[in-house]
Length: 231
Ligand SMILES: C[S@@+](CC[C@H](N)C(=O)[O-])C[C@H]1O[C@@H](n2cnc3c(N)ncnc32)[C@H](O)[C@@H]1O
Image: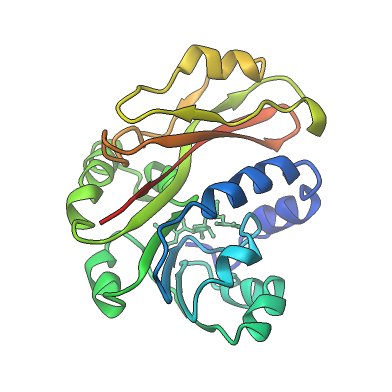
């Protein structure tokens, strides 16, 4: 676990224009979150580079989880406007998310739970593919009784460099439908080898979801899957 992931923060800072449509698609998805919650448990907060202030403004208290040291100061700085104006109490927990899941859930039993672009990295941080797959597909059980959502990497790989106006639209995926892999890759001119982030079983088959294109770097794409599960 890095103290500061300079590469990620520098990339995110410089990519804000290229990521504009992705951030706006994420904001639209966040706006569909189940209502009636004052508390948010936010896993993988980072600096909130893709996070929407209007969503944060719905909560009185946010417990953010990120094992990177710089996440807390950068998140507070980037979202200072809404944190101060809405007097949101923000607490950061610098721990590994999934090893500590039950403890964190118990800390805020009334909170909405959001995995914010973190579960798709689990195969990298866990470094044991079989364990990662088992852990990711067991999350639904561990979250039983809670309202939760996740936006996570589904597939990633090289494709065409597309200007913002030519980036594809999000794809709605009805409950129980498998990812339409070939059409997703075709929309971004996918070629070469693509990675599968093993997140297929994160959301229950009963949850509809949205697939959101994200041109992480020019010509390198992620398709993110985003869905909510209501208690
Ligand atoms: C892709 S970034 C998240 C982007 C973020 N939601 C945003 O809007 O900027 C993933 C973040 O999750 C953190 N992270 C990844 N795996 C984690 C884990 N297993 N436990 C805790 N934090 C983790 C990383 O340090 C990183 O800050």
